[in-house]
Amino acid sequence: MKVFLSFSGKESRDIALALRDWLPKVIQAVKPFISEDIGKGERWSEELAEELNDTDFGIICITKYNSSMPWINFEAGAVSKAIPKAVREPWVVPFLFKTDRTEISAPLQQFQAATADKDGVFRMLVSLNNRLGKEQLTHDLLEQEFETWWTELEGKLDKLIVDLPVAPPLPWLYTADRLTDRQEEINPKQIWVVTPHLYPRTIDPKVRDIIQRNVEHDVSYTYVTVLSNETAEAERDLEHIFNAKRNSFKVIRYRESTIRRLAPTDFLVINPDPDAQHPLHVFLELPIESRGYWIEVDGKAALGFVNRFRRLIEGKSG
Image 1 (cartoon, rainbow, N blue to C red):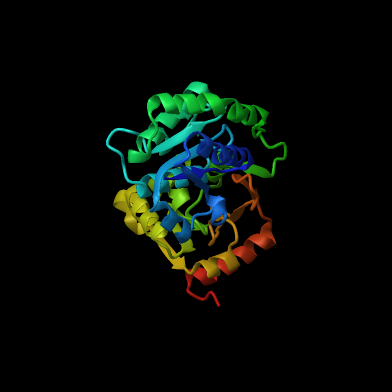
Image 2: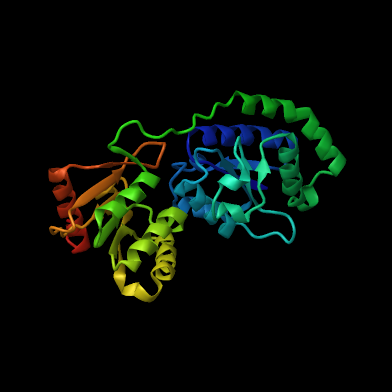
């Protein structure tokens, strides 16, 4: 039985690797895999979607650092759609490492979480074992195997050190929360969102909130992203967000190679056609493993990005 281990960030990846090596020792019929086994761990792909069609169980490795990150929420939602639902047992389990259920947000909140302690891990194994059908272990044998191997996993988890993010010491470095506050200070009238991955942005509760507030003030949005099934689903989500003002947004799609060439990370362009009351601001997300940090580019660079993305919007990508 395939078990998908989802992660976002270094600490979460270490947890996923520990579980990948440990789970088959307890339940030999389990075949764990993580997204980096088939490609980039924090990026969605059609190949990963195909792999999930044969997956029976998903474990989402959650830390205090990544619990609100768009990528981990995106993979959780994608896994839940791909894996057939069981009648009684959970099929997607957020695995909480040194964090609490109250700290996770939708869509993770809809799932029954497991804590990274002895009781929580065993409960998760019972749910996993119950999905094995004819290959499942008896409860007594499962408990025996678990007791044999638990100290090994416990030792690996105890050695993990989660470096929690702190408030950026530099005034020019923005977290997602600070970027939201900055948007409200700018007085936007038009926003371009250029991203290789639109869907994770549309399901992020904080992003949805700022969009809804902006829409109430007649801010228009243009999204430039890749042509994919996930983009089509994101567009349907945007229709619900914009509701009665569906003419206030449009989505422009290109092949992934084109977007990757011109926008290797996410960009937020506010007021691309500036005036005295609505100045131009351009932000980009730093393309590092610890996603969620943004910088604002200076005037000349901002104009350069506007010209580049305007060509995309006008269908002149080259």
